[in-house]
Length: 331
Ligand SMILES: NC(=O)c1ccc[n+]([C@@H]2O[C@H](COP(=O)([O-])OP(=O)(O)OC[C@H]3O[C@@H](n4cnc5c(N)ncnc54)[C@H](OP(=O)(O)O)[C@@H]3O)[C@@H](O)[C@H]2O)c1
Image (cartoon, rainbow, N blue to C red; front, side):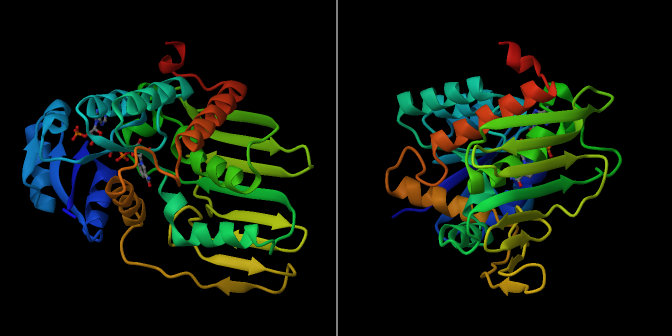
């Protein structure tokens, strides 16, 4: 079959990492970049040897030489940018968080369904070998019944901090940017929480600079999740059950994480080997998208629309409880 032709919408930081990893995907070619400015499109195009350099997102979405578009803009634009691409019949891989809230996510899903075009949230961790191994060990029962999940994710942004981390108009704050990984990991292990408690400390701009989240489950299990832009934390995940514990070392959501398995904790550490590829780790989700497109799928069977909606609805609930609001919530 022919090569899958990729375009990238938004020439920022993550777009560069994704473009670099796309070189590791055997049947993919990066053929187009769309930016708000020609200069930025040209710079990105030169850096990654891209043929089509568009000075608007509309021009990228209209390019007949493109099969699938990776959306790499700030959170507040994901819905608008995705709808634009779907309207032009382009398949979409959209960065996390998929949208500002579940209302926007539903709009995007309705559009993809009505157009019959593939769309997926770029929750890259779900495709990483260390994540898949962890989940399979838990499913095998190696940890027994899971009783507790403890996850922290914290970094102090280098000055000057990227505007999107603190700007409410761009969906700033820790929950949407990094807390989403804590929520995703906890729900991967324990499912949808029965009770949520959450509290945050606001930054000067009003977005959450730190947020502490507690998930409670009817069987007594708990997950304690913490995210912060105020401190450099280990960014590790501990998952413990009746038979043992797994610790995903820093950074738990990236392929660089190591799986430490403690069958009889605290003193029996085993390192679980996981094959590691070169690259940042974006190639796994890109390969999956290629596979879905080749099979003619309009929805991923790994990161489904239901998975995305559950994640968005849970983030909505957390924000409501912690008092984190965006203009997009009012529409
Ligand atoms: N999966 C991951 O590991 C991961 C890691 C980091 C970020 N992300 C996600 O990727 C998205 C982008 O993050 P990033 O760190 O790449 O952001 P970034 O460096 O600020 O890049 C975002 C790009 O979006 C475009 N853009 C359009 N309107 C904008 C506006 N009003 N303000 C700023 N940029 C605007 C710009 O590209 P043009 O000027 O070319 O149009 C900009 O370069 C976020 O949703 C984030 O959550 C995911």
